[in-house]
Image (cartoon, rainbow, N blue to C red; front, top):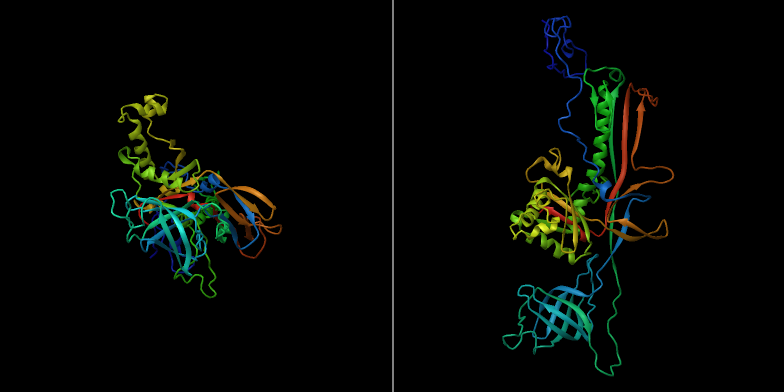
Length: 484
């Protein structure tokens, strides 16, 4: 007995073979061309998700430049002034601190000299002492010892006076050099010379691929649904939609890979032996490792405390005036609530002055730009963080937004042989006179104008090789819902 499927319920076969159950039946009255009443058909596909593409973020904040190597290396300045943290008050007259020889640290040796004048700060109490350095010595390869005398009391322990500072047993002191003092007629100068060093970072490009394939017969198959895609593709050939969506999805992957990328490290076996995968450092990884992180930011009820802590931290970094905020919907509303609490008249109505004394402007609570302290901020929703198929898939995605400086950095380009200015965030792709791998696309097979093989199909291939360079990550801020 023949099995007659209903429309939309074609039964698959375990093998690729022609069966009557593989096809719709139009001769039993269920799906009959001769039936009296035809359905009303909407030919166009309904775009219920709007524009589904996610790329565009890196084009807004960065640039793209070619590279010819398997690795891109850049150097970043260290700080100008001498400072140490995690300093211990070892006795009434001595301070000690560890020397960290790890690559990338600001100071790997003791550069404090005798006759230097230093500020000793206790972060727990806010107390501080100005001290004169009598002796500066490296007690060992990993420990430095300073013999000091305070300017305003007998020693680091003090004598118990109400105004004196007692640093006995403190292990988390901070010190910095603010100058020096020598007596008249001193023959010798400063005993230690400071040789500047730089911090070096690197990243490697990854190869990203995708492919679309359709057999020759289906390229001539006319459908009843009209194709409509984000890149303008239209018609009644369904494979056009599939090819177009493959291309759009690949373009999104080019950006998503550079945002989410991770280098192979730790206990991962991806880079072991002959496996050969190395990964790449994406934006989130770079800012999480070398930048600033704000966990569970809350700007509700007009509280500026959390946001002001960001400003204070930016003051300790590059203090770049203009910054861009790319945020998800939750964080965008938090910032709007914070600014709305300032502008709704709860502060005596004086906040309207921020909006040219216009109440109508003040009550428009969708803030896109604002100034706080000496910084300008421009806020925009980042679709990637809101989309249900990516970071918006769960209520708590871990990443709520990122603050990106809108400046440029000056670097020496070895190819051009001169200093050039580049955005802090930019993409490097592999290219040479022989091959440009920024975005390659080619067709193989024997269908669609290609005659490269006997395969009765059209294969559309996509390939790119690229990485992201995040320079000056200390000026970036990553907003997280929890510690990633």
